[in-house]
Amino acid sequence: MNTLNQIYFIDFYNSLLDGDKQKCYDIVNFLLEDGHSILDIYVDLFQKSLYRIGKLWDQRELSISEEHMASNIISSLIERFSPEPSRKREEKVIVTCIDKEFHEIGAKMVTKVFELNGFNTFFLGANVPTKEILKFVRQIEPYFIAISWSLYLNLSRFLDVVDNLDKIFANKTIFVGGQALSENSDQFLKKFTNVKYIPTVKDLHQVLLNY
Image (tube, rainbow, N blue to C red; front, side):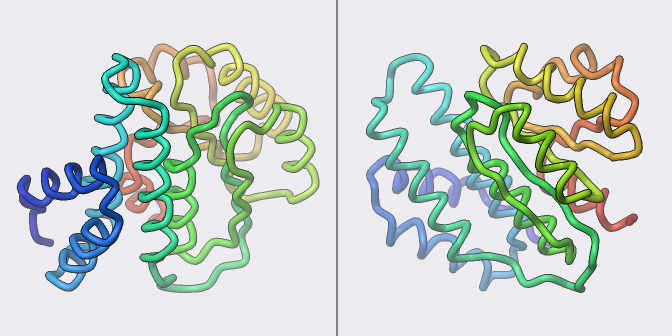
């Protein structure tokens, strides 16, 4: 696998902030044709850009409109460049954001990686209350549950949904990820037995290859 040159990230990132959707598309398309995997794109372009944009927004160096514009471009690219599944499986997976969590792009990429590995996915999107997540898990009976958490201020909501899932569905493996877990995942998750922190979609892909 080729290493994605930093210059492509800078070019993509600047085009994203300029709102140049076509240029962003052209960069992604070129990199895929040049032999990079969709996982390279997700992590080294999309995730990296979103984390940087999130910091700028948090520091009030970027407007809400600019943040939304960039996020929507990336969201459209995720749909445009969906990976083809390598196989087809019957197992179901629920991917969701927690209550009051409106950043759903990471969860979208996670969904695509499950689909790449052949799983039957159910993407619930942003801002799903804990009781609705629990209800849907009972209804669907998934093989895996994946939870996205990005904003640290939603810590109590994250712990609430993970605690309930871990207790009520003790036989289910729960994957968690998101920017809020990037530094303190061990501290937050040490008491949970069925919960696994997944830093990137590349890591998720490697985990799923063993199932």
